[in-house]
Each structure stands twice: as C-alpha cells, then as structure tokens.
Length: 151
Image (cartoon, rainbow, N blue to C red; front, side, top):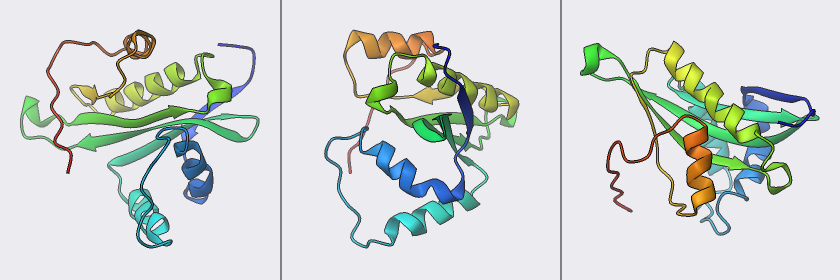
C-alpha cells in the first residue's frame, strides 16, 4: 500500500450519500427504488441490525472503498455463525493500492472475532486480476460451488 493514510472503519449512519455514490462504481446500471425515501428506510434498518456490518476505507476524509459482512446464525458447526461478504467496491481513483485488500482482511478479522467458522464471497467477475485479488485477500476458489437464483 502507498504512504497515504487509510482508515478502515464502520460506515456511520450519516454516510448514506457517500455510500450510494461509491455504489455507482459497483454496477454501471442499477435499478432505482420506487420511492426516493426507500434508501433511507433500508439504511435505517441496516444500521439497527447487529448482524449487518458495513465497513469502509477512508482516505483524506473520503469514503473510497466498502464491503458488507452479514453474520448468519447457524445450528451446525457447533452453533458457530458464518459470514457472507457482498458489495465490494473501490472508487476507480483508489484501485490497485491495497486498500480493498486491507478492507477485506478487516472484514475477515471481524468475522473471526465473531467466531464465524467460514466467510463466503461470490463475484460475477471472471477476469484473472479480480480473482487473484480475492485470493490474495484470503479467499480460496474451488472450495465450494456457488449457485445463484436471480429473482
């Protein structure tokens, strides 16, 4: 990582606009909710749910990367939960600096502290650079087979 100062932390409730701006770099085209207040309502529920964790990387007071970690209670594996990471995105101006790797490692450390026995992450990306990035961040390909039902 470069010499710039990066802070990895929980995203604050007042940072919804910055988070939504960052998500514009996740999906070029994304559906808008039917109501302008839908984002705020969903975000309020997210912030109130102790199993949902939104982590962000900040550089110079700017949110530049994010991921979500959901902790899922479980009745197998000695009742240990598991985690799912989604919505990993870094602003294009801040890519290839190790920021997202540090962010994902933070999420994995958090999941370990919560006694998760595993953390899963799916990506629709097929390019080798992205797949190597996830492997360097601590994930292994080929351990399980993922299936997605789009609804």
